[in-house]
Length: 400
Image (cartoon, rainbow, N blue to C red; front, top):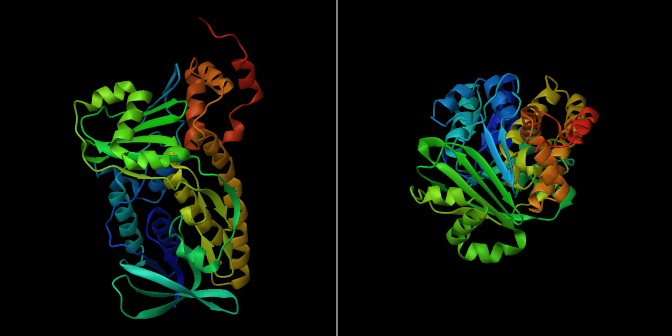
């Protein structure tokens, strides 16, 4: 019998397995796909996520892949331009954007080194319940054949937005909002190694340098345009870049497309119930939001660490474990909700005039610009950005 079975070995699952194994628990980590394998992702890890990798002893391996340090953000909305960087998180000042087939594999390797038993190409067909409590999973190979049962004190669903664990338990949504955007991206060569964001009404473009000199070029569109965009994804993406970031489109003429276009129109916004008897959801399985603010990886790491901290050494005590899961559920929502609401505002692709004027005032100060980017990264809580002192400063006339 295992202490913990983690379903899903992407960033949320692999990091959760790693932390629980290091806490001394017997952990089985299951992944449906054959690894290593890529996945849809904006790649970007904000400073708090990078700090977590450093704290876990994983960052050096990520850096060794050759992914560049991203220690500056360039952001243009309308005629307002901001350039700066987030405050550091635990002394970490740079962000990174490694390819997912590299990052996920590194996390799995560290989990295995910590004692995790890892099985890929393995599907979870059902959950095992005893007296209403989840006590294990029924698994089989994705290639078919027989099934086996694995038992554990805790089953962690880290299997993504379309979570099998959540579906089998019919876990309810406790918060749900409309889908606002569809997103498409590809990888391009010979672009400046700069993390850049461009926003106009109805469109958003980002350039994110990653491994091997490639840059992820992403375009965001209103959800109602999904059918048209999907029908000609590359042309739609290039047109979005030309309209929103014409200088980037000019730079792309000197490079070449490195991969096909990837994308989705299924950017759901929700919180599911986080936990119950013998089970818990982490990562996109429990909470998903639009990728436009690139918070997915960082928030997955936050949830993994939070769950491990809540459980502590209490997993073998049913009462303590139940209390720990309840605590995780409350704290997860409290921690992630402000950034969730902020992301939804951005995903509407319609910055109101007062927000643009606020950004214009912020752009006149390096200190305020750094503070603003710190809210984007999660170092500065959203609700702590506009202090009374800052509001007074922003009310001052802007020098011509």
